[in-house]
Amino acid sequence: MTFTPAWLDLDRNGGDLVGQIYRSLRDRILFGQLPAGHKLSSTRAFATSLGVARSTVVEAYDRLKSEGYVEASAGAATRVAALARIRPEPQQGDRRPVAGESSEQPPYRALFRPGAPDVSDFPHAVWSRRLAARSRSLRIHHLGYENPTGIRELREAILAHVSVTRGVVAEPEQVMIVPSTRAAIDMLARSMLRRSGRATAWMEDPGYPAARLLLGDAGAEVVPVPCDDQGIDVSRVEGPPPALIYVTPSHQYPTGATLSLPRRLALLEAARLGQSLVVEDDYDSDFQYGSRPIAALQGIDRAEVVAYVGTFSKVLAPGLRVAYAVVPRWLISEASEALHRRGVAVSAHIQAALADFINEGRLRAYLRRMNLQYAARMARTVETLESQFGGRLAVSGGNGGLQLATWFRDETTDDRMVVAKAYALGYGLMPMSHFFLGRSAPGILFGISQAEPAAVQRLAADLRAVLD
Image (cartoon, rainbow, N blue to C red; front, side):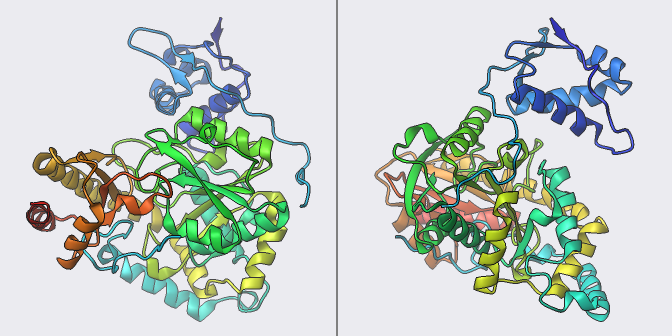
């Protein structure tokens, strides 16, 4: 039987028709209303029935296919893929019982430092005007203690941005403004450990060392969960359910892998059954090269188990000290209290100026420009490493983000020694073994934000001397 979209009522004044079609089909697939193998209408018939351009439907189908919801081949019909289903959204909001290693980073200005944006391209003039204007006219109610989780203008602006770009679904009350991703992770870890009464946290292995330290400082026993080229695999960990699970599903740090759809669904189901909180660190998914980024895990969460964390440190500049967390409704009270206890806050002037920057479309324009620049720099780095070091290094990823993972083909290589020698030459490279809790593999993590032609040529010459 062929599926027809008679039920789909498009909001033609709301824009993003591609996104509306994609989300409607995606949700019906996830909830089992479109079973595996079900045949969708042809793009021409679908478009005709909705009264939209065929290209609109083609783009929505392509997005579903790229994320694994449907399957299609040349000359064949588009059919729903075989996937695990997620449970419907709970009827009641509060459905739960109440109950190392150094993370030091190389100097910020070191060449090819992973995770660091190119602040030389920061829109200084526009930002200065916005900040000056807000400093002169900030409303009185923004200057008191009434906004511990952030001013409403910024929470609404952030939510408008991530709902379109990342598929996040929430209300402004769920958005909390913090100075950094680390502050968000700390807040969520302490809130969830206190609420659940459990002391275990799962996290990706390899994974973000700072998150590992923060979880430990909050009192959690960190359990490493193996990652491969499909991301974290929760089927490979045993023991009682954790209080929380820390993941970077859209662009795994440091490997760059994207969490596959079956693994996403398995993670959500494990969290639902274990009453665990998934902390989704979406640190640099605004930068995607060559394809549309896969939607946030939070957007397909119907059991309210995901807290979504984002930051402007990677998007604009670390010096702004602005990040945010979109928390489940049942955790708002505990998370707000955790922020209040630790005195974590962002200047109201910075918040108001950033809200204007986003609402005026400045952020979207900046991201479009930087995506083009970073894509060229990533391609330049990948091409150089593959052409000149392909016999020694296997390059993985390169489709997004501000860093590039490589692995030594000779697994006996001491990557820490190689990085130490490169550090002496002014490079901020990082050894891949640094990110593992369990058995590690040697490699090098490169930053790409400043990979201009001359810098890449110098890197190739210096790296060759180090390796030889």
